[in-house]
Length: 390
Picture 1 (cartoon, one colour):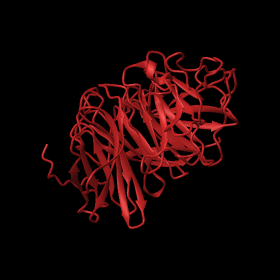
Picture 2 (cartoon, rainbow, N blue to C red):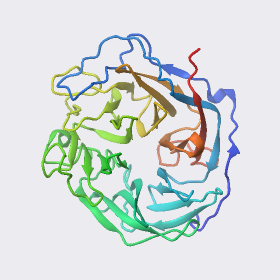
Picture 3 (cartoon, rainbow, N blue to C red):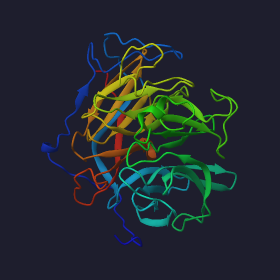
Picture 4 (cartoon, helix red, strand yellow):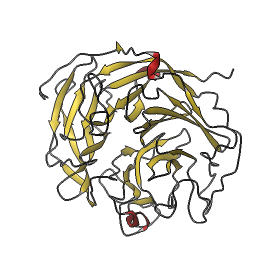
């Protein structure tokens, strides 16, 4: 594909038939084994008990109508961030390219990050931005020939003419592999940078306190360990993770993360500092002393969760193998979930808040594991409405 491309495909209505299954699939019922209580504090053990599915909060939302195409023709996109200027940036995993999506729907190449090596699931993964005075930094989680690392570059120029400045390494030496690389990075409400790091195919790393793999990390914008991390001088925030790829905070500032299981259960976890989420000893809700159970779990065929967003009392979870968007409603210490657009758009990699109260989702059918449709991959915009109480 020519990288000097400019396309204007904003808001073309996406039409597909009833056979693609826009009907809602509702998951979460009385005694559902997929849900466990939300811990009120970091517990040594969380016990899953049969319970009625909670009602969504008063401000909870859900998709309505047919999504529209914001832009198409993306190649293995992985992450998208919106800028205050009205432009957005998209990472393309295999090429190491950062694209700019302009306000009018035009897309252009900002630049390629040098040294990115793609193999399997590895390459240019999550991106995030930080405004520091008059400077905007673009952060990226990427794979090199020797490791996974987090870097940052100043974003230079103006909308329609952005470029990347010199790269600074923030964190180096994370073990890499063709799978289980994690890769999501987000700034939290505390101003710290959080990163999901997979076990890179060696499950024992997740329980090894000396390894940064199989962990969720928390660091300052320059890569240092904050003084209030669970262990002095360590970036490790939580342990026992297999391949987490989603991060989001609720209205109270509580961190949640989505995680790929192995053969049985995918997970949504409430992340407490210093807690252990069990991998590889346990997978899913296990009721084992010393490990924190997920607040919701799915079979791997239903989810394979990647990006995670939180809007209006609602978590939106992007499902790859499950080829659907999940809404998750935490309430009264339990969680319920519904599935949307099953099979309608194929694999979904990321979900973020869009403009004017909408949701953006990023498809991922050109990553070597999906079945590309015409003009894949796409960034889609979804209108949201309050959940009906009727």
